Each structure stands twice: as C-alpha cells, then as structure tokens.
Image (cartoon, rainbow, N blue to C red):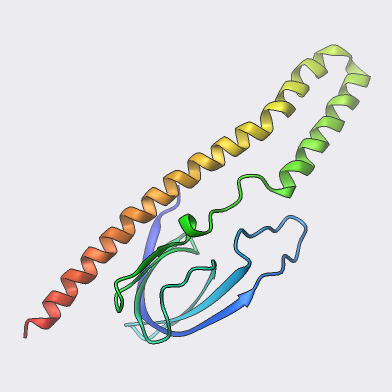
Length: 172
C-alpha cells in the first residue's frame, strides 16, 4: 500500500473547474475539479489537483493536505478547524467502463477458445469471466474502506498536531 504524506502551508489560490472526461475509460465520481496552489513554509509553491465537490478551505487559509502517492486524499483546514476526506466525499467508482469492455472481451475469447479446443477451455474461461465482476467490485470496495480509514486516522493526527502547535505558539 502507498504511503501517506502530508504537506502544510497556506492556500495561495483555489480554482474550480468542471470535469469533462477526455478518454472513454476516464470516469470521475465528482464532476468538479479543484486546483490548489499551496505555499509551504520553505517557500515552495505546490500545485495539487483534487476531483471533489467538497472544499472546506479558501484562499489564505492554513491547511494540511494528505497525499496518497501524488494524489490528494484529505485536507485539514487549521484556520477553520474543518476537514475533508476526499475518498469518503467522492469515492472512486467500483465498476468502470473498462471492466465491462474486459468482460465482453473475455466472453468472446472464451467462445473462440471453445470453438478451437472444445470443453476444457470453456470450463475454465467461462467461470473466470463470470467471477471477474463481483471479485473486482469486492476488492475495490475493501481497498476503498481501508484507504478511508487510514485517511480518517491521519486527519485526526493532523488535527491533533495542529492544535498542539497552536498552543505552543500562543505561549510567549
């Protein structure tokens, strides 16, 4: 499983766009895309793209963004105390157009294999083709639940560390 990374900084700019899938297999659960420009404490500007309808932060807010690989999956807004788990708000699809095309291709391949080799190929390929959809959906659902739980735990940790830092800053 990929590691979760966090990036802290101030939101310099937030842009909202409407998604239009470019390829036949691209499907986003959210029709909105947000481009975030984050200015870190080290002076670097980072561009992050989030496919979500939910954005609990505006320009000028101090935020912590959780990244799973290179993809933003969570955001904690230290300015307002709000947080967002993007995987929970707009979960990835369990069944995709690519899967339907793959099942159709496997069915055609199993019929062709049956025509050339008779029953043994059909006895193997047809059950595998029929088991593919529920198996893929189940595996994706379990992965989604595990990732959501990891992000929720990481957001709680980010919230706790932000609260501890703000208490230390006020004691002068």
